Image 1 (spheres, helix red, strand yellow):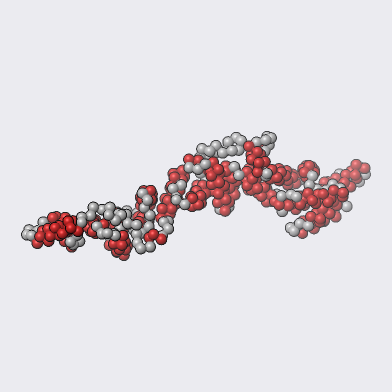
Image 2: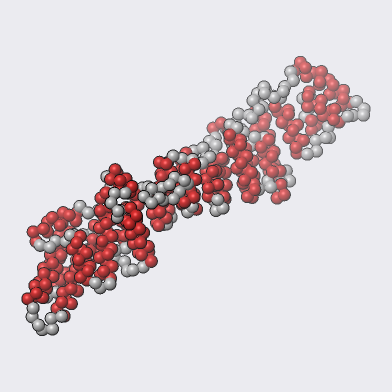
Length: 457
């Protein structure tokens, strides 16, 4: 709709205008001609465009004023203003001598005057540099708050979905976020579309990594203090979801450590534990490295703060969600990490004591079936990496057997023979157990386990 509603402008009736028309013609032919009087009467009488009536129209501003004055006197000015806008767009910025000095305003002002808001503000944001983007964004906000649709006035403008304001707000926030993430947030929350707000805020959090500033900090009990900039605009549940969205965004960008931090801040402890479990499991078979050490330390910190001292806020949340099985998997993986570390240090007896304590492997034939069932009840992340446990356990048994044999030096001992027999029995049970599990990825592992067991004669 035209910015000036029909009938809202001061319109002189046709009956009253006729005397003004007569005055206009007399003033135009009177000598000497008073150009200002002629121009004024031309505007009032609408007898001729003021640009044709005098030589006073020398600037673009004068031309626009005269053209708009005539247009708003019409019963339905929409079509004529739209036509003027099309002319301005056809002439382009060169016609208006738009230079760098104007910051884009020499062309933007005529477009805005003709209600070509989308073209005008887009041009200002593009041609005016950082200042033009700032001005276009704030002007768009003011116009939108006034109820103006930020589209180009024309025959199809009512069918167009306004998209300029979100685009400007996102562009300006992106420009601002490196300097002040909280200030950038103030623009993103003004996007009219809630789904777009959620998407852009998650991007802002993930890109700036201003987690404490935007989301608040963790308290001693593992909960969030709710003093972040997001809390100024959203309830706690919504902030939690936005932080979780940012975690997903960080994970997509391969910033897994950032994703873990955001999930902790969001209070999504189940998702955080799942992530920690995946990382711990994936590093079981890897040699010591910085990434493996990082995740071991991160997991240890989480356990010491939230799981090692009885009932905590974190365990209460997980219990309420029915997700304590994740804690069991986490604790099991932490123990298996210790098991693998002992193997790497060639502390085979200590490694074996760890796996024995976990009670994952059969110690006699009669429990074989129950241990197979126990395996199938484990979390998938454990089952997918269980070959590490099987091969490591056999390696431990083999090395203990070889060391014990090497200490005999031809001296027979009943206790030594008994221990060697026990080790061979556990090795045999382990070979059988591995075969019963029928793991898809243990072809080489099964062969290696069988070879080690065969060498324990």
